[in-house]
Image (cartoon, rainbow, N blue to C red; front, side, top):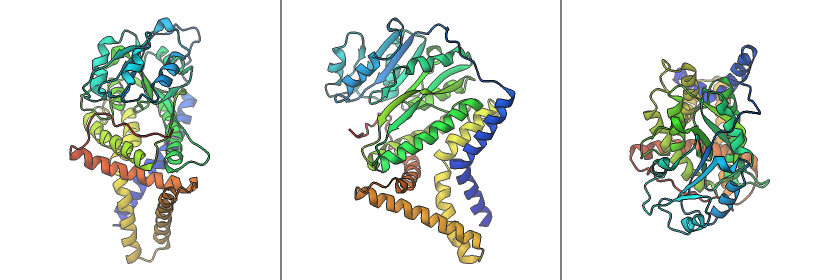
Length: 389
């Protein structure tokens, strides 16, 4: 029982904190022996297709089109495609008013991956940039992404997701904002060590020639598209100066809905990305993938429960102060989480309590997502979460 407790505790700490420290030191060791890739300011810019899947986004689509058209990239090297499969509002009609944008619309809604597959024959350029309809890119985002393709080893480039957090933020804003700042730091170090291990649909790009169709029932298509490229030996770069801004989920309920879907897609991707998990192909990629993704999406949330239960049993059977101290720390953490939930429901804005609450919500979502996936209750059709206005 004590051994099981220590294993649980070690995996939990490694997953959420320890891997970051390991990366920190490995990256600094690498810097001693190898210089970073140097980009040329005079390199010719590649042709780019910006691909945007939009579902019932009539309230924001005009702003998205404006933002896309104002990006600092040569117009003669840019193609913009909007896919609106299944949209039942005025989104397709508003897009159709813009002659310099290609609209692909179909009344049937079959999921984002099916929509992307349908759009691929219309892609005419060297690089595809994927971005969501409810996010806004910084003006130099495309230039910052494509510079990484000067390195022939790079097959995909992930941009940064940034959450707009108000000073008096609720749990979804404060928690999501903190989570993505930490994630961005890990992604930066992941790439510096070897490769990123996935991409977020808010903003990422790939070499068009490396695109591989993934199964139409894929739940987190962005992650799968990027990782299939990594499985073929190419690097997934990370560029924090290319970023997509969006508001947080409208509330924790909406954020939970999104996280459960991602978790269901996470377990689906683990079952399908067999090369990424096999160290005989690309050992460093496997180390990063298991540490950064697989542990979070599989055993660690269950180990949080196991560690608490085992800790209680050990304290009841032994008199060691250390185990009592760890149990008190766990109880205090979960008490803070409950306070965070209470404060959010009462609309009391204290960020310090929202971080533990968001952490618990995130791990609950993994458990719920795994259950939903195995019960076959998760559709591949993208679920629109309400965002703060």
